[in-house]
Image 1 (cartoon, rainbow, N blue to C red):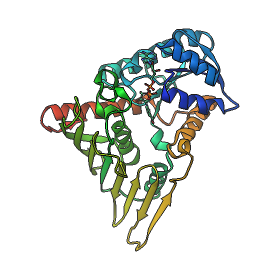
Image 2 (cartoon, rainbow, N blue to C red):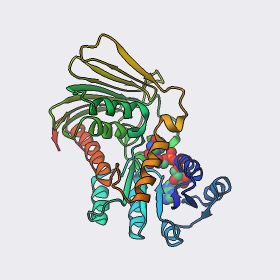
Image 3 (cartoon, rainbow, N blue to C red):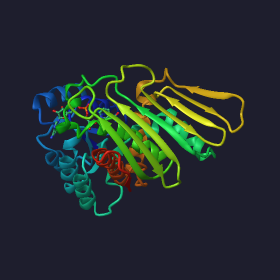
Image 4 (cartoon, rainbow, N blue to C red):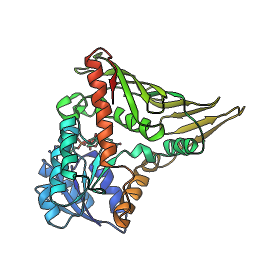
Length: 322
Ligand SMILES: NC(=O)c1ccc[n+]([C@@H]2O[C@H](COP(=O)([O-])OP(=O)(O)OC[C@H]3O[C@@H](n4cnc5c(N)ncnc54)[C@H](O)[C@@H]3O)[C@@H](O)[C@H]2O)c1
């Protein structure tokens, strides 16, 4: 597979490192608005510098990884699709519903053209939680935390022009996780504060799923780096599943006196965060032409939920029905 990257930054490098190690990938190169960055990138990872995604695809690139700031995804994804490439789009898919609608309209129902980088689905703690649920753990309710210690680094995290807003950065992983582990979200209510940074940086959300489960989610950008900054706690039939960071998952019940903890703290970071497994899943599907497990529709729905949170917050916590 001939693969190229748009965005010679942190995530571009992470993906390039993983792709280079695969015998089934020919790394074609990179494009970025910063050509000096592109040159450095190619010195490290190989491949060629391209002036645009169109040029990259016309040179034979079949799969394009989009790893540029959140609000810029739409333009590049659309361009890559129109040139005929398959796209791996980093999360978030996009940062507003108009952009989401435009990509869906370009796709026109075609499958296996866009995969969204929700790596947490493949992280061992969440994969194990999914397995427990598939094996019969019935979720009634849950409590979720997704915090940032601070919003000082990288410098653009408070720049809504680039991120689309706080919820589009890490929190959107948890919106996807609710759908993935529990089911579609049908009701959203959210209140927001601007506490310490020049944007809304603190949110309290309530969700009800199509199955009637209720979930509470707290997320802010000023939590300090107290461990864990990320946690899901699900309650079932006299049972609990708790994940802490991407390190631990604990299960107890139903009516079991003992709890069992799986600890993956010392796993290689790219495995612990699910990046390696996500690449395997995505590239296998491309090669074998099997349906993508994380689709444009998953990306679309995560944006719909994020947008509903902002709309609810702007109306004082009004319930938004999805
Ligand atoms: N899945 C994850 O775990 C995870 C983690 C961090 C970031 N991300 C996502 O990855 C994406 C990239 O984040 P990053 O940390 O690599 O950012 P970064 O700032 O390190 O790199 C972004 C690169 O994009 C380039 N760029 C900006 N606008 C462009 C445009 N219009 N066309 C081409 N290049 C452009 C910049 O010059 C820069 O080199 C973001 O969407 C972010 O939300 C995902």
